Image 1 (cartoon, rainbow, N blue to C red):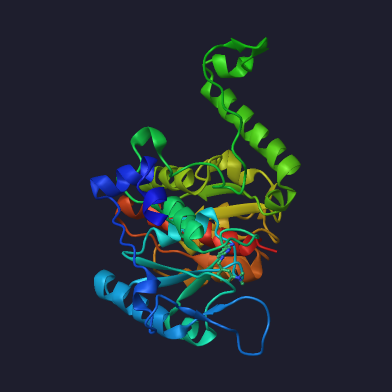
Image 2 (cartoon, rainbow, N blue to C red; image 1 turned 180 degrees about the vertical axis):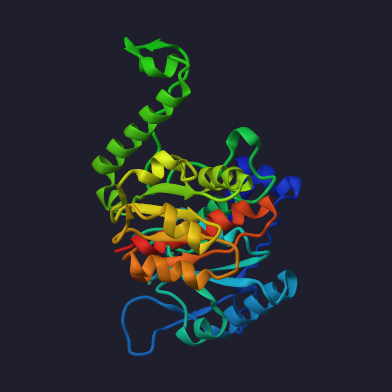
Length: 346
Ligand code: 4G0
Protein backbone atom coordinates (compact mmCIF):
# COMPACT_ATOMS: atom_id res chain seq x y z
CA UNK A 1 0.00 0.00 0.00
CA UNK A 2 2.78 2.41 0.88
CA UNK A 3 4.52 1.78 -2.43
CA UNK A 4 1.32 2.31 -4.38
CA UNK A 5 0.56 5.63 -2.70
CA UNK A 6 4.13 6.91 -2.63
CA UNK A 7 5.02 6.11 -6.21
CA UNK A 8 2.09 8.09 -7.58
CA UNK A 9 1.99 11.71 -8.76
CA UNK A 10 4.49 14.23 -7.34
CA UNK A 11 5.78 11.81 -4.69
CA UNK A 12 6.38 9.31 -7.47
CA UNK A 13 8.27 11.89 -9.49
CA UNK A 14 10.36 12.80 -6.41
CA UNK A 15 11.35 9.18 -5.87
CA UNK A 16 12.01 8.54 -9.57
CA UNK A 17 14.25 11.63 -9.76
CA UNK A 18 16.19 10.62 -6.66
CA UNK A 19 15.23 13.72 -4.65
CA UNK A 20 13.61 11.36 -2.14
CA UNK A 21 14.40 7.69 -1.52
CA UNK A 22 11.89 5.24 -0.08
CA UNK A 23 12.53 1.83 1.41
CA UNK A 24 9.61 -0.25 2.71
CA UNK A 25 10.19 -2.94 5.34
CA UNK A 26 7.47 -5.43 6.25
CA UNK A 27 7.35 -6.20 9.97
CA UNK A 28 5.76 -9.59 9.19
CA UNK A 29 9.10 -10.71 7.71
CA UNK A 30 10.45 -10.55 11.27
CA UNK A 31 7.84 -12.79 12.87
CA UNK A 32 9.31 -14.98 15.62
CA UNK A 33 6.71 -17.69 15.05
CA UNK A 34 6.59 -20.24 12.26
CA UNK A 35 3.73 -18.19 10.83
CA UNK A 36 3.71 -14.53 9.78
CA UNK A 37 1.99 -13.59 13.02
CA UNK A 38 3.39 -10.52 14.81
CA UNK A 39 0.60 -9.83 17.33
CA UNK A 40 -0.72 -11.31 20.55
CA UNK A 41 -3.42 -10.79 23.19
CA UNK A 42 -3.07 -7.80 25.50
CA UNK A 43 -1.99 -8.45 29.10
CA UNK A 44 -4.75 -7.32 31.38
CA UNK A 45 -7.38 -8.22 28.82
CA UNK A 46 -9.45 -5.96 26.62
CA UNK A 47 -10.44 -5.85 23.01
CA UNK A 48 -8.09 -6.26 20.06
CA UNK A 49 -4.51 -7.35 19.65
CA UNK A 50 -1.14 -5.82 20.42
CA UNK A 51 1.96 -6.03 18.25
CA UNK A 52 4.81 -8.00 19.80
CA UNK A 53 8.04 -6.17 20.63
CA UNK A 54 10.65 -8.44 18.99
CA UNK A 55 9.56 -8.24 15.32
CA UNK A 56 9.27 -4.44 15.65
CA UNK A 57 12.72 -4.25 17.20
CA UNK A 58 14.26 -6.39 14.45
CA UNK A 59 12.52 -4.39 11.71
CA UNK A 60 13.70 -1.07 13.12
CA UNK A 61 17.27 -2.38 13.47
CA UNK A 62 17.10 -3.46 9.83
CA UNK A 63 15.91 0.04 8.86
CA UNK A 64 18.74 1.61 10.83
CA UNK A 65 21.25 -0.58 9.02
CA UNK A 66 19.96 0.78 5.73
CA UNK A 67 19.41 4.40 6.75
CA UNK A 68 22.19 4.99 9.25
CA UNK A 69 22.00 4.81 13.02
CA UNK A 70 21.32 8.55 13.33
CA UNK A 71 17.99 8.17 11.52
CA UNK A 72 15.08 9.53 13.53
CA UNK A 73 12.40 6.94 14.38
CA UNK A 74 8.87 8.31 14.26
CA UNK A 75 5.89 6.32 15.50
CA UNK A 76 2.59 7.15 13.82
CA UNK A 77 -0.04 7.02 16.53
CA UNK A 78 -3.32 8.78 17.29
CA UNK A 79 -1.92 9.34 20.81
CA UNK A 80 0.47 12.17 19.88
CA UNK A 81 0.70 15.80 18.93
CA UNK A 82 -0.80 16.43 15.52
CA UNK A 83 1.55 17.06 12.60
CA UNK A 84 1.57 20.63 11.33
CA UNK A 85 3.32 22.57 8.57
CA UNK A 86 6.16 23.73 10.82
CA UNK A 87 6.85 20.17 12.01
CA UNK A 88 6.88 18.94 8.40
CA UNK A 89 9.42 21.64 7.53
CA UNK A 90 11.52 20.68 10.55
CA UNK A 91 11.52 16.96 9.65
CA UNK A 92 12.62 17.79 6.11
CA UNK A 93 15.95 18.90 7.56
CA UNK A 94 16.67 15.34 8.76
CA UNK A 95 18.80 13.15 6.53
CA UNK A 96 16.80 9.95 7.21
CA UNK A 97 13.47 9.17 8.82
CA UNK A 98 12.19 5.77 9.90
CA UNK A 99 8.40 5.75 10.07
CA UNK A 100 7.01 3.03 12.32
CA UNK A 101 3.47 1.94 11.46
CA UNK A 102 1.40 -0.01 13.94
CA UNK A 103 -1.82 -1.99 13.52
CA UNK A 104 -4.57 -3.24 15.81
CA UNK A 105 -4.57 -1.50 19.19
CA UNK A 106 -0.93 -0.52 18.96
CA UNK A 107 2.52 -1.82 19.87
CA UNK A 108 4.02 -3.26 23.06
CA UNK A 109 5.13 -0.24 25.07
CA UNK A 110 8.60 -1.63 25.90
CA UNK A 111 9.88 -1.63 22.34
CA UNK A 112 8.43 1.81 21.73
CA UNK A 113 10.39 3.04 24.73
CA UNK A 114 13.58 1.62 23.23
CA UNK A 115 13.35 2.66 19.61
CA UNK A 116 11.00 5.62 19.15
CA UNK A 117 12.43 9.13 19.06
CA UNK A 118 9.19 10.94 18.38
CA UNK A 119 5.44 10.21 18.34
CA UNK A 120 3.37 11.95 15.67
CA UNK A 121 -0.33 11.83 14.81
CA UNK A 122 -1.65 13.00 11.46
CA UNK A 123 -5.01 14.00 12.92
CA UNK A 124 -7.55 13.25 15.61
CA UNK A 125 -9.02 10.07 14.17
CA UNK A 126 -8.15 6.37 14.15
CA UNK A 127 -7.03 4.47 11.05
CA UNK A 128 -6.78 0.71 10.58
CA UNK A 129 -3.00 1.09 10.40
CA UNK A 130 -0.29 3.72 10.55
CA UNK A 131 0.67 3.29 6.87
CA UNK A 132 -1.59 5.98 5.45
CA UNK A 133 -0.36 8.29 8.19
CA UNK A 134 3.21 7.57 7.12
CA UNK A 135 2.29 8.40 3.51
CA UNK A 136 0.71 11.68 4.59
CA UNK A 137 3.77 12.59 6.63
CA UNK A 138 6.08 11.62 3.77
CA UNK A 139 4.17 13.78 1.32
CA UNK A 140 4.03 16.82 3.61
CA UNK A 141 7.75 16.53 4.44
CA UNK A 142 8.86 15.87 0.85
CA UNK A 143 7.42 19.19 -0.31
CA UNK A 144 10.25 20.86 1.61
CA UNK A 145 12.99 18.72 0.09
CA UNK A 146 14.97 20.56 -2.58
CA UNK A 147 14.17 19.25 -6.04
CA UNK A 148 10.76 17.80 -5.17
CA UNK A 149 8.67 20.78 -6.25
CA UNK A 150 9.32 22.90 -9.30
CA UNK A 151 9.63 26.67 -8.92
CA UNK A 152 5.97 27.23 -9.72
CA UNK A 153 4.94 24.75 -7.02
CA UNK A 154 7.19 26.40 -4.43
CA UNK A 155 6.58 25.63 -0.78
CA UNK A 156 8.61 28.34 0.93
CA UNK A 157 6.00 31.00 1.44
CA UNK A 158 2.50 29.70 1.53
CA UNK A 159 -0.61 28.75 3.37
CA UNK A 160 -0.23 28.43 7.13
CA UNK A 161 3.03 30.35 7.23
CA UNK A 162 1.51 33.03 9.46
CA UNK A 163 -1.12 30.64 10.85
CA UNK A 164 -3.48 32.04 8.24
CA UNK A 165 -5.42 29.98 5.72
CA UNK A 166 -4.94 30.30 1.98
CA UNK A 167 -6.82 33.08 0.17
CA UNK A 168 -9.22 32.17 -2.67
CA UNK A 169 -7.69 31.53 -6.10
CA UNK A 170 -9.11 32.13 -9.59
CA UNK A 171 -8.09 31.25 -13.11
CA UNK A 172 -9.64 31.66 -16.56
CA UNK A 173 -12.35 32.20 -17.69
CA UNK A 174 -12.88 35.69 -16.30
CA UNK A 175 -16.61 34.97 -15.98
CA UNK A 176 -17.86 31.47 -15.19
CA UNK A 177 -21.48 30.53 -14.40
CA UNK A 178 -22.13 34.30 -14.30
CA UNK A 179 -19.57 34.68 -11.54
CA UNK A 180 -16.83 37.21 -12.25
CA UNK A 181 -13.29 37.04 -10.90
CA UNK A 182 -12.79 39.76 -8.22
CA UNK A 183 -11.87 43.00 -10.01
CA UNK A 184 -8.83 43.74 -7.89
CA UNK A 185 -7.06 40.65 -9.27
CA UNK A 186 -7.27 42.10 -12.78
CA UNK A 187 -6.01 45.54 -11.71
CA UNK A 188 -2.29 44.80 -12.01
CA UNK A 189 -1.78 46.72 -8.75
CA UNK A 190 0.43 44.29 -6.82
CA UNK A 191 0.26 46.10 -3.51
CA UNK A 192 -3.53 46.19 -3.67
CA UNK A 193 -3.69 42.52 -4.62
CA UNK A 194 -1.43 41.59 -1.69
CA UNK A 195 -3.64 43.55 0.70
CA UNK A 196 -6.82 42.00 -0.68
CA UNK A 197 -5.40 38.50 -0.35
CA UNK A 198 -4.25 39.17 3.20
CA UNK A 199 -7.72 40.45 4.14
CA UNK A 200 -9.32 37.38 2.54
CA UNK A 201 -6.97 35.08 4.44
CA UNK A 202 -7.80 36.81 7.72
CA UNK A 203 -11.57 36.65 7.10
CA UNK A 204 -11.41 33.02 6.08
CA UNK A 205 -9.29 32.02 9.08
CA UNK A 206 -11.61 33.77 11.54
CA UNK A 207 -14.59 32.03 9.96
CA UNK A 208 -13.23 28.52 9.39
CA UNK A 209 -10.43 28.13 11.93
CA UNK A 210 -10.90 30.49 14.87
CA UNK A 211 -8.44 28.32 16.83
CA UNK A 212 -5.75 28.96 14.22
CA UNK A 213 -6.58 32.67 14.04
CA UNK A 214 -5.95 32.92 17.79
CA UNK A 215 -2.41 31.81 17.10
CA UNK A 216 -1.80 33.98 14.04
CA UNK A 217 0.58 36.86 14.31
CA UNK A 218 1.58 39.99 12.47
CA UNK A 219 5.28 40.22 11.77
CA UNK A 220 6.94 43.62 12.04
CA UNK A 221 10.60 43.85 11.26
CA UNK A 222 12.27 46.92 12.55
CA UNK A 223 15.78 47.75 11.56
CA UNK A 224 18.46 50.35 11.88
CA UNK A 225 22.17 49.97 11.48
CA UNK A 226 24.20 49.78 8.31
CA UNK A 227 23.13 49.58 4.68
CA UNK A 228 23.57 45.83 4.74
CA UNK A 229 20.92 45.68 7.47
CA UNK A 230 18.18 46.87 5.15
CA UNK A 231 18.95 44.26 2.55
CA UNK A 232 19.11 41.60 5.24
CA UNK A 233 15.87 42.85 6.81
CA UNK A 234 14.06 42.64 3.51
CA UNK A 235 15.24 39.11 2.79
CA UNK A 236 14.49 37.93 6.30
CA UNK A 237 11.04 39.50 6.46
CA UNK A 238 9.69 37.70 3.39
CA UNK A 239 11.05 34.39 4.67
CA UNK A 240 9.39 34.83 8.04
CA UNK A 241 5.99 36.04 6.89
CA UNK A 242 3.85 36.39 3.84
CA UNK A 243 2.69 39.81 4.95
CA UNK A 244 5.57 41.40 6.83
CA UNK A 245 5.71 45.06 7.82
CA UNK A 246 9.18 46.53 7.36
CA UNK A 247 10.09 49.63 9.34
CA UNK A 248 13.28 51.50 8.56
CA UNK A 249 14.20 53.01 11.91
CA UNK A 250 17.09 54.94 10.43
CA UNK A 251 14.40 57.42 9.43
CA UNK A 252 14.10 60.16 12.05
CA UNK A 253 10.40 60.56 11.36
CA UNK A 254 9.65 56.97 12.39
CA UNK A 255 11.84 57.23 15.47
CA UNK A 256 9.81 60.22 16.69
CA UNK A 257 6.47 58.46 16.31
CA UNK A 258 4.90 56.58 19.18
CA UNK A 259 4.25 52.95 18.33
CA UNK A 260 2.90 50.15 20.43
CA UNK A 261 2.75 46.45 19.73
CA UNK A 262 0.28 43.96 21.16
CA UNK A 263 0.14 40.28 22.03
CA UNK A 264 -0.44 39.15 18.44
CA UNK A 265 2.49 41.12 17.08
CA UNK A 266 5.79 39.43 16.49
CA UNK A 267 8.45 42.11 16.53
CA UNK A 268 11.85 41.43 15.06
CA UNK A 269 14.53 44.01 15.70
CA UNK A 270 17.77 44.11 13.78
CA UNK A 271 20.17 46.19 15.75
CA UNK A 272 23.82 47.14 15.82
CA UNK A 273 24.71 48.67 19.16
CA UNK A 274 23.06 49.23 22.55
CA UNK A 275 23.37 53.00 22.12
CA UNK A 276 21.53 52.97 18.85
CA UNK A 277 18.87 50.61 20.20
CA UNK A 278 18.05 52.86 23.13
CA UNK A 279 17.98 55.98 20.95
CA UNK A 280 15.80 54.59 18.19
CA UNK A 281 13.39 52.49 20.20
CA UNK A 282 12.61 55.07 22.86
CA UNK A 283 9.03 55.64 21.70
CA UNK A 284 8.12 52.03 21.17
CA UNK A 285 6.15 50.00 23.65
CA UNK A 286 5.91 46.26 23.28
CA UNK A 287 5.29 44.91 26.73
CA UNK A 288 3.07 42.03 25.64
CA UNK A 289 4.42 41.08 22.24
CA UNK A 290 7.08 38.51 21.61
CA UNK A 291 10.17 40.30 20.47
CA UNK A 292 13.14 38.78 18.79
CA UNK A 293 16.26 40.78 18.33
CA UNK A 294 19.07 40.11 16.01
CA UNK A 295 22.36 41.73 16.68
CA UNK A 296 26.09 41.19 16.42
CA UNK A 297 27.52 39.09 19.20
CA UNK A 298 29.13 42.03 21.01
CA UNK A 299 27.32 43.30 24.09
CA UNK A 300 24.00 41.54 23.63
CA UNK A 301 23.41 41.71 27.39
CA UNK A 302 23.31 45.49 27.22
CA UNK A 303 20.64 45.37 24.57
CA UNK A 304 18.72 42.83 26.61
CA UNK A 305 19.04 45.10 29.62
CA UNK A 306 17.57 47.99 27.64
CA UNK A 307 14.62 45.86 26.53
CA UNK A 308 14.02 44.74 30.08
CA UNK A 309 14.21 48.30 31.39
CA UNK A 310 11.58 49.35 28.88
CA UNK A 311 9.33 46.44 29.79
CA UNK A 312 9.65 44.80 26.39
CA UNK A 313 8.08 41.35 26.66
CA UNK A 314 10.35 40.46 29.55
CA UNK A 315 10.45 36.71 29.24
CA UNK A 316 10.27 36.51 25.50
CA UNK A 317 13.22 38.31 24.06
CA UNK A 318 15.67 36.24 22.12
CA UNK A 319 18.96 36.93 20.55
CA UNK A 320 19.67 35.28 17.25
CA UNK A 321 23.06 35.94 15.81
CA UNK A 322 22.88 35.75 12.05
CA UNK A 323 25.69 34.27 10.08
CA UNK A 324 27.30 37.02 8.04
CA UNK A 325 26.42 34.96 4.96
CA UNK A 326 22.97 35.88 3.68
CA UNK A 327 22.37 32.32 2.53
CA UNK A 328 21.63 31.51 6.15
CA UNK A 329 18.61 33.80 6.09
CA UNK A 330 16.29 30.87 5.42
CA UNK A 331 17.60 28.96 8.40
CA UNK A 332 17.26 32.02 10.62
CA UNK A 333 13.72 32.63 9.36
CA UNK A 334 12.81 29.06 10.20
CA UNK A 335 14.12 29.43 13.74
CA UNK A 336 12.11 32.61 14.15
CA UNK A 337 8.90 30.97 12.89
CA UNK A 338 9.50 28.10 15.29
CA UNK A 339 9.96 30.51 18.19
CA UNK A 340 6.85 32.39 17.14
CA UNK A 341 4.90 29.12 17.19
CA UNK A 342 6.07 28.48 20.73
CA UNK A 343 5.23 32.01 21.92
CA UNK A 344 1.74 31.91 20.50
CA UNK A 345 0.54 28.46 21.45
CA UNK A 346 -2.01 28.49 24.18
C1 4G0 B 1 -1.19 2.95 17.32
C2 4G0 B 1 -2.00 6.68 13.42
C3 4G0 B 1 -1.33 2.83 15.95
C4 4G0 B 1 -2.30 2.92 18.14
C5 4G0 B 1 -2.14 5.29 13.43
C6 4G0 B 1 -3.71 2.59 16.23
C7 4G0 B 1 -4.36 6.91 13.34
C8 4G0 B 1 -3.11 7.50 13.37
C9 4G0 B 1 -2.60 2.61 15.42
C10 4G0 B 1 -3.57 2.71 17.61
C11 4G0 B 1 -3.43 4.78 13.40
C12 4G0 B 1 -2.97 8.98 13.36
C13 4G0 B 1 -4.58 2.94 19.85
C14 4G0 B 1 -6.01 2.47 17.91
C15 4G0 B 1 -2.77 2.48 13.93
N1 4G0 B 1 -4.50 5.60 13.33
N2 4G0 B 1 -4.01 9.73 13.70
N3 4G0 B 1 -3.71 3.45 13.44
N4 4G0 B 1 -4.69 2.71 18.45
O1 4G0 B 1 -1.91 9.50 13.05
